[in-house]
Image (tube, rainbow, N blue to C red; front, side, top):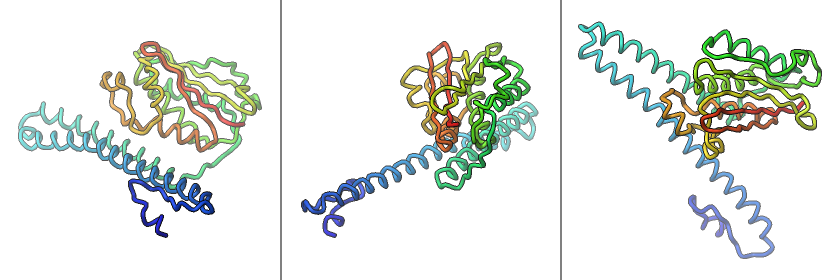
Length: 269
């Protein structure tokens, strides 16, 4: 009891000096470190979320004030303000929805509805949808269409969530690639023992190795992505990683700055 009382929030370590209690100390200290890390992660998450929400709120307030002063009589100010308010409110809505998704996932409230699904067919659907939505880029399948009926591509997945993860990657590929470039989808049904690989490759701005190592962290955005001036929260890839992790899979990225990126999702069959 005295050893526990001496432990502080900043230094959660219990030491009794009793050899008979050494194994209990190890287990207890491991638990305390896990609790401290969970607390720090929660604090970082709240701080980052507050920071990300502060920007669109400030922009909205600025345009509302401008409308109040000059927008009633100036049509140009009115039109500019309305367009910016719509864009910022949509950005904030997307950010809040992403935050809620991750919060529900962290709390264990997101239930996977698995069904045996052909992943090649699923990838084909995402490719077709992407081409319909975005006509500025070319989307192509780099695998034999026969795989859409090949049982080696079958896996028990939550179709909606896996599609969501792929759409996040595809949207990033389009956002950070010039018009006219190609986004390529691949699938490898024999990637490993009972593993299936899905890949999405772009010809965009790419990332350096340091940025690639942090790509799936919450709120992280590479420097060149910020410099490109594109809007984003830095939560999309974190959501994709959560979805893949929840399926018992692995997600990774290989990227070269100025050349492009290839994201790979490996799922168990």
